[in-house]
Amino acid sequence: MVARETVGLRKKNTGVRKRGKERREQLIKAAYDLLCEQPVEAIAFIDIAKRAAIPEGSAYHFFSNKYDVFSALAEELTEEFIISLKRPFRKDQITSWQDLADQFVKRGIRVYRNNPPAGQLFLGGKTPPEIKLQDRLNDRAVAEAMLDVLNEHFVLPDIPNFQNILYYFIEITDLMLSLSILENGKITGEMIEEAQRAGRGYLSSHLPENLVKRRRTA
Image 1: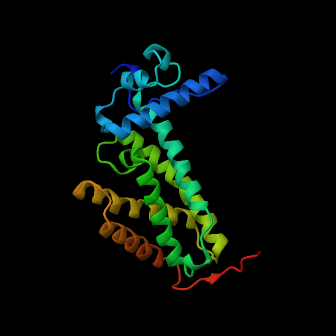
Image 2: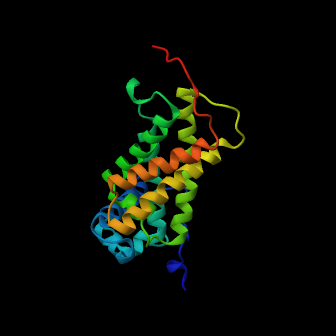
């Protein structure tokens, strides 16, 4: 297998000038648009370059292959999950940590529904293992954001490696959503409830039933 076809080969993004950054973003946007229309396995690097209106040879200055582009897109989509998680909640939405856990799942699903490529890259069965590995790394950043939000709302007990527990929560709930797509072709309401139930059940093995709610300052 030649270097350009190697799955997971990442092009280092160092010293890129403004025009180079713009072209890089054009390629990422092209990959996003193509994933809205086609399955991930049907897209070739040349398709991404053509959609971005960038010669294929020039595109290789920014990404080594299509997997490299998809990994960069996955990183940008991860930021969407973090932004969504950190948006303020209404007071009546959060009365317990269980409510917050359910809201984490709901907000994640909203990002999936607003960004179809995220479903392909993070939940689909055809994504290459190397991109799945990148997703796992990204999920650890999401878990860190979840920990910040939980700390904002509740006094947490001293639990070693609790961020890892939240990472496992993400993997467990995403598994339920992946099964929904595999079996139904979409995320169903029933499987959303199953994802929430699975997430709450896992966290309840580490958290007490009730946590002290933090007083919110005006």
